[in-house]
Image 1 (cartoon, helix red, strand yellow):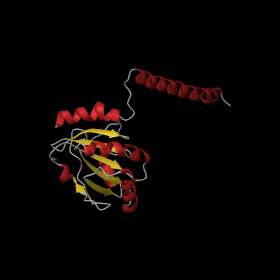
Image 2 (cartoon, helix red, strand yellow; image 1 turned 30 degrees about the vertical axis):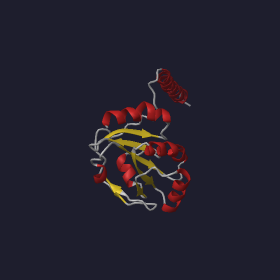
Image 3 (tube, one colour; image 1 turned 135 degrees about the vertical axis):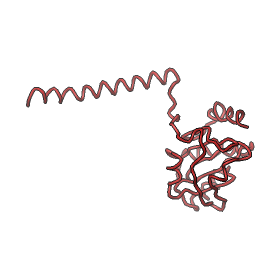
Length: 185
């Protein structure tokens, strides 16, 4: 084995280990300084209208299209979820509380079927004023959905102002959603 090849065999893994350690150190530093939010995934929709779509209703509910949320009477949430999603079931009681408090929430069932959704809604409650089905997942791709649950805040002019990837929590509602509702109501 040549000396150059031997150096590469030992050098490349060493360089990769150092680079990985540096990345980990940067992540820890950002966490310590409260500059790291794993849910803060970029969204191309912030500050824009949702892309064109038209989805049918599911589980006996009326579907909707982008034109239906182009100018809602008040700010609203569009919540992507699925019956097979455990975090979706965890956030369901909080969505129910928000809906009971008067917040308009429209749901989009991601790659799900009517029978499973009906069972999910019977068990976890139904906070949705409208419920559409994205059975193919194409609309989710166009929205930039990373996974379910995912929630979008839409203001009265139909502009997406906020996106949250993951299950909503009381802390997120208090620290982020409530200020948005105050600002855009």
